[in-house]
Length: 245
Image (cartoon, rainbow, N blue to C red; front, side, top):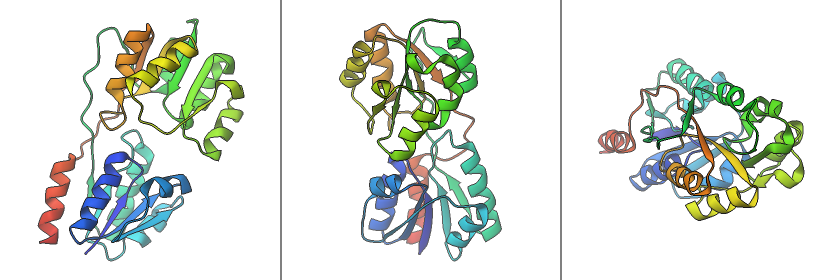
């Protein structure tokens, strides 16, 4: 039985391997070669790397019993396209969701990157950006010299930093998630006053970032996730078990 999983998240990779172990023929779609590298090889898993339009997604979904959207919780446009493609292909689609994290007292909530940038506009101090490279254009208005973006160690991420005017000495190119100790070391090394992060949940090390911000005296600024009506990991896995038995 063919299952197509649009991935790129830690839990998506775990789910793809578990489904393959149950006997499914799993096709995992990721947008970059870096995503292919992170997914890795495995029996029963075929990886498609590269961006896909809705028609391309529908073509990959042809003949599948199920589509699983395991993209990042903040990838709103990708989720909309995946849903459109699954409808076009006539394949049922499930969204793998993350539960919102409890927020620590004293943190600042922002609806999106634009709101966070407005909050930081007239506040002095260095900023550790743990929101990924796609939001760099929004934060670039704050001035590249005070921004310390933590991005994936990939060419496209470094190029995004250069376009945003980030000095090379400020770029932290590392693959997470990270322990509290490393987050805290970065806060101290670069005299960070604000740590901006998405609510990445347990899989993305949110608690470790929150703890490090508190211990390092940095203000935690959290971009809250959009409303996500999906299903949790166990619910989707149990649904797939029903299909495969």
